Length: 437
Image 1 (tube, rainbow, N blue to C red):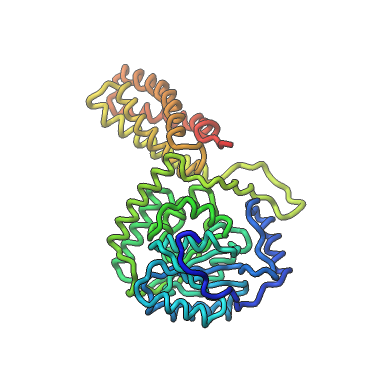
Image 2 (cartoon, one colour; image 1 turned 30 degrees about the horizontal axis):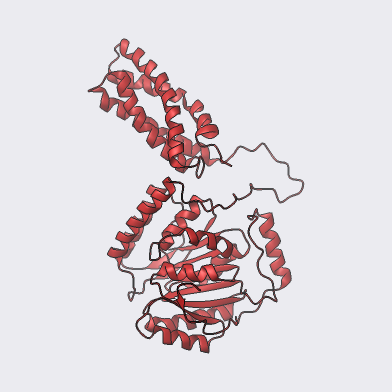
């Protein structure tokens, strides 16, 4: 294993009962019917040495928490988990007795292994273990078990079935119950709000240390994740949504352990730098994973009567919201510039502002992951804006000749822009954000 030292301390010997071949075959057939990606392998069947689920626990100087955390998880898996499993403790650079504790646990408990990693960072530990895993589903959790283990089965079940690509625990979603200090609560909510505003993220909790992924997806995804530290979670989720992967969320019960290695201030600064780097990669078209798109939904009933497909209903809502934003920016920009400029150049200035705002809004809300690189999308949108400018300039120039006042000119501009909505939607759908490939 590149970047690691030492061999695995114990051979895998999962203690959970193996699922029957019939149940695993049924799960695989359900995955195909639900539109599973062609590259996804079926869940592993009985008779193989590889576990269905591998749970990674990254540790750094955790001699106090490691023994209790692993024993508690091991007991839970033996008692309640329906699939074969493995626990892998990844120590990346501990200077206390963590390695000794890990080796003792691996020798004592069947199905527990220890790996040593020379590179520090939680992200580095998880990526190294996930990439070399022979399991069908890979997961990780924090050693302090802040997340209640009752959420583990609903976390991995959609991945074993093939329904979802990633699964995350959320402390901010509906139904979650948490106990933590005000400072961490405020930082968490502000950070996740920034992700929703800045990236259009649909997941609710990026940093919860309780995540899982299908191994075939995790390999490609982690290869594109550049961060080896605490931003690993966020970058992985942003790339997953950017590439159209299905992310399943599970509301969790979570209790803060104040003996944490997280330094909130330093981690926040590191994450902000990571957000800028990720946004730059997305803008340059460097964030693609090369995964095939998920097939369109198909009816399960063989005699279903289907209506004419109308596309994603949310497209109209997204377009309406983006159009409203662009119209407000256009009109406000025109009024602002009209005090110093003539009607036609003032209209051009307002239109340039609205084009950038509207294109970005449509890229996130109406046509996600379509159109190619951001530079190409904006160049096509600029040509469309030129036509819009010509038509609206004729309108405002004619209105100015009648001298209705600036508010009157703005009303004419608003009316003409509204009339161009249908034409603009068609042009965006078929040209600016056309599907590529």
